[in-house]
Amino acid sequence: MNRSSQGNPCPSDGSTTKPPSRRREPASAYTRSRNAAARQRKRPSRPRSGPRARIRFSDADLLRSRVQQAAAALKLRGARKHVLAAALELLCGWSRLSDDQVRIQQLIRLCEIAHDPKTVGRALASLHRDELITYTPARGRGACATLAIHPRFLDEITELERDESGRVITFSDAAPISLSKKNPQTPHRLRDRIGRPIGVAINPADVAHVLSNTPEIYRDMPCLLRGRLRAEIRRCLGRGYCPQQILAILAAPVPAEVKAPFKLAQYRLRQNMVGAGPRLRPLQRAWDRAHQAAVTARDRSLRERKTDELVEATTASIRARMLHTLLALLPGQPFADETRALVHAARMACREFPGHGLRPAIQRWLHAHPAPTATPPPATTAEGTCLFCHAEDAPMRPELPIAAAVCEPCWSAEMSDHPLPEEVLL
Image 1 (tube, rainbow, N blue to C red):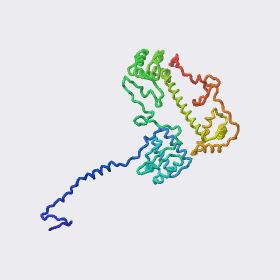
Image 2: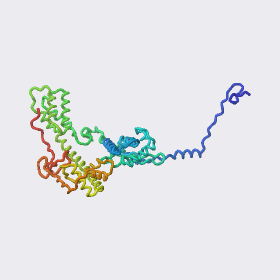
Image 3: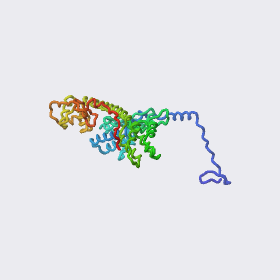
Image 4: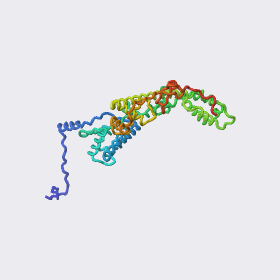
């Protein structure tokens, strides 16, 4: 019998035979149940604490600058400097206050120089001890670390709210314009981004009334110029002016020979109707009062919180020394409110000695600026002569750009709706 080189028998007639196929037997019931149980046993993922806190872009830049200023005082070098920059890019670069799904490899990729994972972990722990960031290392197989900005940098930083679906609410978010006549909405252009009214709704009947009662010189203009005049009338109506005021300006005496009547009407409307009209002005004043009340309440609450922290960290003798030191550093500027002066002195100490707590910074500041002990400086009364009516004993108004005394009648008086001048600018 002939045999091949591989030792396999082959028929003498030269024909080939196909090896028998091995048919796979079906799995038993025990094997199927074991495989199904293995598929169901999945490794539980680490539960997240919720959506990450988001902040405004401007607040993120402010946070980054605060942390960098504090880090500059510590003179970081090497891995600590690179890891801090990577952490700020991971948090502030994405407008986050914290992140509970951080892995070391993310920070290594963001570092200027690739470091060993153990080196990055030690650098994060060192930055945590220096109170630049808050770091909670990952514990367990497949777990993630938690990284956040230290709470001492979060003054006046507010977290953006979220709607029912979890989306972040920003000032640019607004309801879409409805074209339904049953429930019309105010167009977006009538309000700016911060909510202050910049226009009122325009009634098409007012536009038609003004166009139909304009002088003959304007009614005889071509269709294109009449359309442009209609746009000018709508602009004045949107700024809060009344149709009668617009007609009074358009009905002013016209020169004998006018080559461009539309240019004349446009010039007169824009020169005589400057600013907000009588319908828009009350809306703006109401918004200004509400906004100023909110800002005042926020400043008051912040000042009270700072005062409480200062009282807890200092004693009465230290606060008296702070007042003497502040008066020595700012001669000729007596303070009207001791609380404001103390808060200002504490702020000066923290800025001059960053990276320290409130009490150590104040002690270093008092040691660096010794002041002679004497009787407490007399606090000036927060009153003066009114800036408008020159009345005596008018309270100071810190809300103004430069603090000045304004009496209560002048402060609460609202600008009346003055009519347009009788003489139209020609």
